[in-house]
Structure formats: structure tokens, C-alpha cells
Length: 143
Image (cartoon, rainbow, N blue to C red; front, side, top):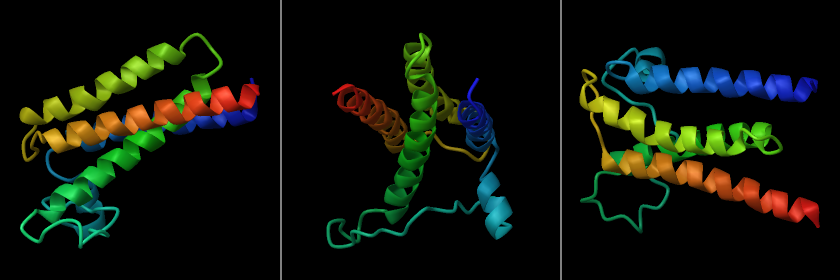
């Protein structure tokens, strides 16, 4: 097996485990590590489109949604690239779609966590975007 594929598989499965731990940790594990505050969630970006979102809208929703979208896009791209040429590709697609919904639903029962529909949509869109990017790559790489 190619060393690059072995390395990517290590990254993919480590990222999946990290995703599960971060999603189900009671409170914010990243907030605990970064800010020493279990209640504070680090975000990838402040709201970069202030003009488009009125001040009355909670900027936390945008920042948290961006976090979810980017992580699920990243994990999907790595997983899909690893498996795009074998028979397990469709299984990985279904697993990531299922995981994107299931981990958020489990936050109903996880202490200090909350289910948010915005997060489910961002998770799902991250996986969907990764899927289409890989499919587009496959089509153009054949020509």
C-alpha cells in the first residue's frame, strides 16, 4: 500500500475519533484547552460579512456553523480521497452523512451540549460539498 494512503488513513481515522470526542464531550473540550473555560467555544472566524448579517442576528450561530462546515468538509475530503477508487466509497459517504446527523442528535442527551439545527445543516453541507468536489475531480481527471 502506498505510504501517502497509509498516512491519509491515519489522519482520517484520527480525525474521526477526535470529531466524536469533541462532539460528545460535556461542554467545550476545545474551549477548555484553548481558553481554560469549558463554556467558551473557539471559532474559526468572527463574522467576516458584517454587512450581510444584521446586528440582531446572533454572530455565534454563524461562527459555530462555519466551524461545523469546515471540519466536516475537511474530514469528508480526506475520507473520500482515500476511498474514491475502491468499493467502500459509497459506504464512507453514507457513514459520514449519518455521522453528521447522529452526533448532533446525541447532543440532546449530552450534558452542557445543545442540539442546533444550524449545526446539522452545516455538517450535512460540509459532507455534501466534499462529495461533489471529489466527484467533479473524478470527472475532470478522466478527461
